[in-house]
Image (cartoon, rainbow over all chains, first blue to last red; front, side, top):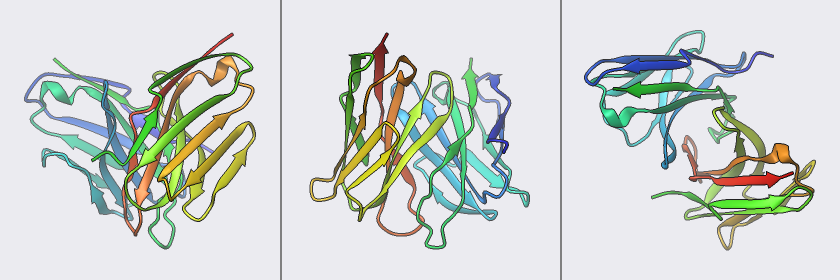
Length: 116
Length: 112
């Protein structure tokens, strides 16, 4: 089975620009999650989509947004890029239990976003 | 506030030794999960333990959960150089649609 795929692998932008990151989940998984992993800060939860709807959102400004498409793939958009947005952005997917309780998440290898 | 916090932050052991990593959390949880991350890669799920379970095994991994102390431990027995990685615990607060919150991770180095 194909794993979670993310594109691009690396992305270099300048301050003020906009970035779009893409994620394809494992076939059959309806939930997609986005995380930011900056140096020294661990994984910070960004967004959780399931069946096209936003289920939960982390403590990030509105310039971080995303969406999930009917085929369950997802995009993360970051507007008005700032230097501190430089990080590894990880996408994960999972099945969603009927109770909404977290199941094991399967991660892609991330997009390395560098802001110059 | 950070839900899961691991300790130690870094651990260096000799191949063949056991490695024990601990995780503490603050609120009631649905389940607790452990993940591994090799340098430059995504996280790999290792094991999930539900709040009503006390111990779980998977190969060389043993996880315990003490909900009264709000803590968990991950034991890797007979470590190998390939176990060198960062290890994270992740928790979700009791209830539905709760996000998974990761700790900052433990860096494990296994010397050959």
